[in-house]
Amino acid sequence: LATLNIRSLCNKSFLIDNFISSNNLEFMFLTETWLNSKTGNAVLIGSTPLNFTFVSEIRHNRKVVGSAP
Image 1 (cartoon, rainbow, N blue to C red):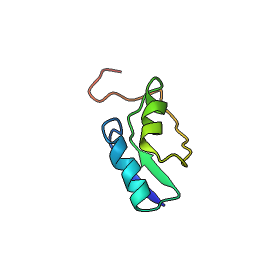
Image 2 (spheres, rainbow, N blue to C red):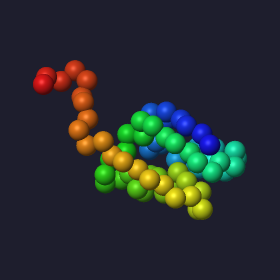
Image 3 (tube, rainbow, N blue to C red):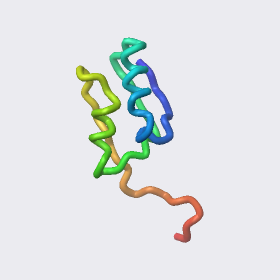
Image 4 (cartoon, rainbow, N blue to C red):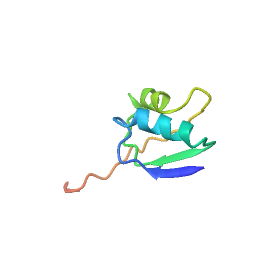
Protein backbone atom coordinates (compact mmCIF):
# COMPACT_ATOMS: atom_id res chain seq x y z
CA LEU A 1 0.00 0.00 0.00
CA ALA A 2 1.39 3.42 -0.93
CA THR A 3 0.17 7.01 -1.35
CA LEU A 4 2.00 9.57 -3.42
CA ASN A 5 1.30 13.20 -4.28
CA ILE A 6 2.52 12.83 -7.87
CA ARG A 7 2.02 16.46 -9.05
CA SER A 8 1.39 15.49 -12.68
CA LEU A 9 1.41 11.88 -13.74
CA CYS A 10 1.75 12.52 -17.48
CA ASN A 11 5.54 12.27 -17.73
CA LYS A 12 6.01 9.79 -14.87
CA SER A 13 4.06 6.75 -16.06
CA PHE A 14 7.08 4.43 -16.34
CA LEU A 15 8.32 5.46 -12.88
CA ILE A 16 4.98 4.66 -11.23
CA ASP A 17 4.63 1.31 -13.01
CA ASN A 18 8.16 0.42 -11.91
CA PHE A 19 7.52 1.61 -8.33
CA ILE A 20 4.39 -0.54 -8.05
CA SER A 21 6.13 -3.62 -9.43
CA SER A 22 9.41 -3.17 -7.52
CA ASN A 23 7.61 -2.78 -4.19
CA ASN A 24 5.07 -5.54 -4.87
CA LEU A 25 2.20 -3.16 -4.09
CA GLU A 26 -1.40 -4.25 -4.04
CA PHE A 27 -2.77 -0.69 -3.79
CA MET A 28 -1.35 2.62 -4.99
CA PHE A 29 -3.09 5.94 -4.35
CA LEU A 30 -2.07 8.99 -6.36
CA THR A 31 -3.12 12.57 -5.67
CA GLU A 32 -2.70 15.64 -7.86
CA THR A 33 -2.36 13.57 -11.03
CA TRP A 34 -3.52 16.56 -13.11
CA LEU A 35 -5.16 14.24 -15.62
CA ASN A 36 -7.99 15.32 -17.87
CA SER A 37 -10.99 13.47 -19.23
CA LYS A 38 -9.48 13.10 -22.74
CA THR A 39 -6.11 11.54 -21.89
CA GLY A 40 -6.49 10.38 -18.28
CA ASN A 41 -7.33 6.73 -18.93
CA ALA A 42 -4.47 6.28 -21.41
CA VAL A 43 -1.96 7.72 -18.92
CA LEU A 44 -3.30 5.50 -16.12
CA ILE A 45 -3.11 2.38 -18.30
CA GLY A 46 0.53 3.20 -19.01
CA SER A 47 1.21 3.77 -15.32
CA THR A 48 -0.02 0.45 -13.99
CA PRO A 49 1.14 -3.17 -14.29
CA LEU A 50 -1.03 -5.46 -16.42
CA ASN A 51 -2.75 -7.04 -13.40
CA PHE A 52 -3.80 -3.69 -11.91
CA THR A 53 -7.21 -2.04 -12.08
CA PHE A 54 -7.52 1.70 -11.65
CA VAL A 55 -10.25 4.07 -10.54
CA SER A 56 -9.99 7.75 -11.36
CA GLU A 57 -12.07 10.80 -10.64
CA ILE A 58 -11.43 13.98 -12.61
CA ARG A 59 -12.10 17.22 -10.76
CA HIS A 60 -14.15 19.31 -13.19
CA ASN A 61 -14.50 22.53 -11.19
CA ARG A 62 -10.89 23.48 -10.68
CA LYS A 63 -9.91 26.69 -8.95
CA VAL A 64 -7.40 28.61 -11.05
CA VAL A 65 -4.87 30.52 -8.94
CA GLY A 66 -4.68 34.21 -9.74
CA SER A 67 -7.89 34.45 -11.75
CA ALA A 68 -10.75 36.81 -11.10
CA PRO A 69 -13.99 35.31 -9.72
